[in-house]
Length: 67
Image (cartoon, rainbow, N blue to C red):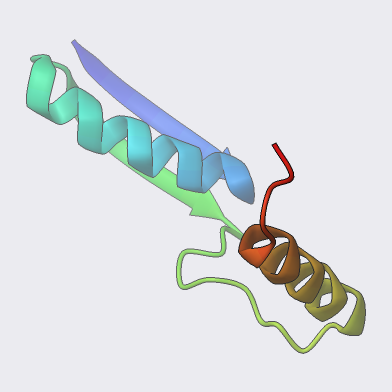
């Protein structure tokens, strides 16, 4: 079976991950794979709000649980 895939933004990343897993376990032939505006090399982090979110997550991850 031949399959054509198109993914936009995060969908392109999800498709690439799925293709890598499916290639190992199935006999599907991926004929065409198109990603549109997918951040395949990561995202720029010069956005101030994004940086605040990353800093909060880092602090939360490093915090000690009270349990």
